[in-house]
Image 1 (cartoon, rainbow, N blue to C red):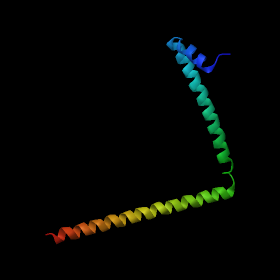
Image 2: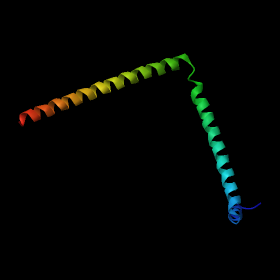
Image 3: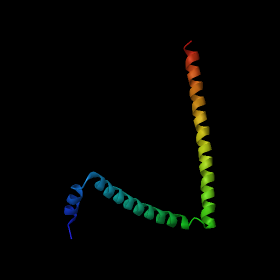
Image 4: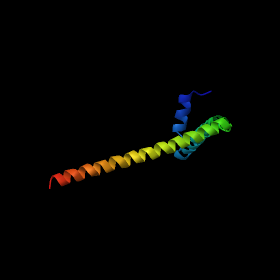
Length: 95
């Protein structure tokens, strides 16, 4: 059996279209392996999400997130209004 280094050298001596086939096969094999691992992890991740208590918690988290976003926008609006008010005071004071 050839060593890995000898096999690599053998592939390097082949024509470009053959080397391209080796590259495509290697990339496809790696992609299949990565997708398989990803699918197994997604299946594992979502297997516990069908329980009612998990869904209830997710709904509560979503509601809290919505309230946090709303509060952030209110705070941003207050900050902008305060900045505008102060700039108007400075502009009126300089006249």
